Image 1 (cartoon, helix red, strand yellow):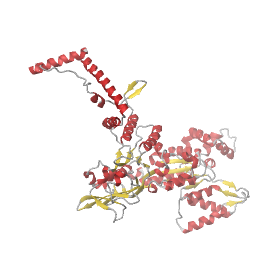
Image 2: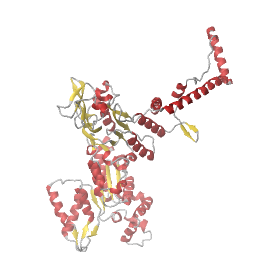
Image 3: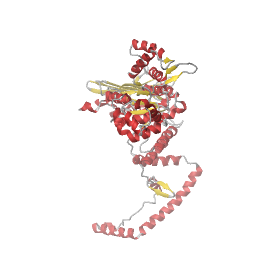
Image 4: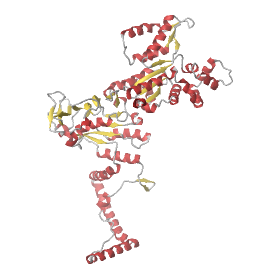
Length: 595
């Protein structure tokens, strides 16, 4: 069985959303975007621990940003073929193994009413009212929240774990255990007999009994002893504690990360499903990465997928866990300008997978951090990335606070990255060089940078009006020339038109390239001072010096002169950062809004 998709309407921060799931699904998004609320909606439908009281929604459970009188939560299940479900739900499952569960709540006479439904499909004919979520005993969700009572669960579960292991013994193992039991009981009896002989134990016993005799003569008839109760071997075994062992030395487990691993391992061991299980469960775990370092976060994501045979849904803030998931198994949640939670590409989507196919062997160059961003600035290489990160700091634009990432594409294949960001519904901008490149086997030179910007636009945008579309395709014919000293007017007009047009869609074409544009900016004197302290180089020679070992040069220059970058605050070079800041503050508000 698999939870294929969920429809949520009018619930908390979900006005209306459809979320598609895969067998293993990772839900990501900023804090308070609705990850827990989505899981909670599923719990209302399928969590065995939920009571009738939980089903009676409060005012705060209805959609928060409009006057909403109805909540609908609907789960679509496919491949429902397990005997433990099919045998108990005749008439509710289609011939294709499909089933729909629904919860609906509404206001009636000032009170919240609710009803559960179940059926072969979501049609009015199929979806019938049912007396509560009767199916939860054999079709349910098992949930681990982000706030875990580590030791409480471990102490509760260890007895079950030991009993499960005991039942799985074969005859030979059981006979060996019986023999060992007898040996342990003899040793425990020896311990019980010897401990009271310790001098300080004997002294303490005599003092206690003496005081008791003062209280009542009847206490003289029965002596009180300090007893280890070690004779009861079952009690000794039930009181065993989990500790760590290193080179035959026992250590107390103190690290929260290790405790988290033990917790999840115990939980996985107790919740494994087999072909003879009497229930089918979907496992939901919030923030499994708690207290773990990056390598263990990645390993945990892989472990949970292997250890739990059924469907697994995780929520996470960890880019290391994101990197372990197939792109089309990631659900990205975000808020729009009305604070409504949206689901990128409706959740697990082929569109996201298709976007990644273009990366091929370069899959790893897309940092998982980008999945968590609200805005990504795409640049050509590491020197641009270093400049924009440092420039942002000098201009007091806090990229982390604004949830903006700067990402270098390590080349000029921007379209592939744009396809991915579009599928994840992440806003983006581009800064690229205005390259002019000779066309092979011709005498023509083409404006490769402009053409690159055109490809970026076509990958993600529609024309705002017919005039733009007409001029776009007309001017596109005039982006090549043959004589650099005599460029036709229609070519220069086309270049200028495209620069202005693309800039409206946050696609910035450099005047020449990063180094030349920097040299022509207000940083001119600073660059001359750094690269040509003896004033021996011509302007183009300074630019060539900047281009040699670009990334290393940029790093050393920024290290020495980053305090001068404020001079670029009104320059076109700073535009991508300013635009990104403005877009985010338009969506979520700025600090000035509260003044």
